[in-house]
Picture 1 (cartoon, rainbow, N blue to C red):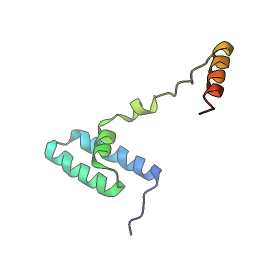
Picture 2 (picture 1 turned 60 degrees about the vertical axis):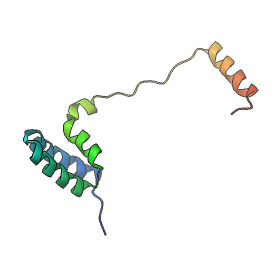
Picture 3 (picture 1 turned 90 degrees about the vertical axis):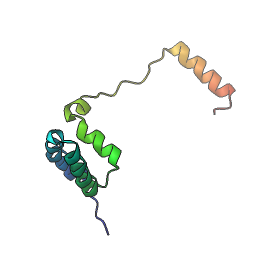
Picture 4 (picture 1 turned 90 degrees about the horizontal axis):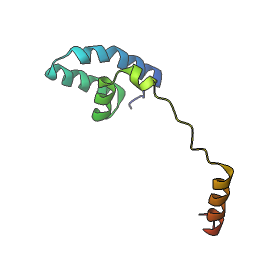
Length: 87
């Protein structure tokens, strides 16, 4: 039975493996990737994306606010929604 790793542990492992992966040649990258996939259970493609991305770029992403409509547009949308039987 395989136990799953906590998210914190997987992130710590990613941080420690990322530097070795960046400095490795093509053959060694495959070996590092194999070990990382075996330890985390991630799909291989997802693991390569994680190892190639810098964590600062993913941490800086911000969620945009949802679209704001004025009251006139809201009322038009509500009337259309009711006319369409609230689908």
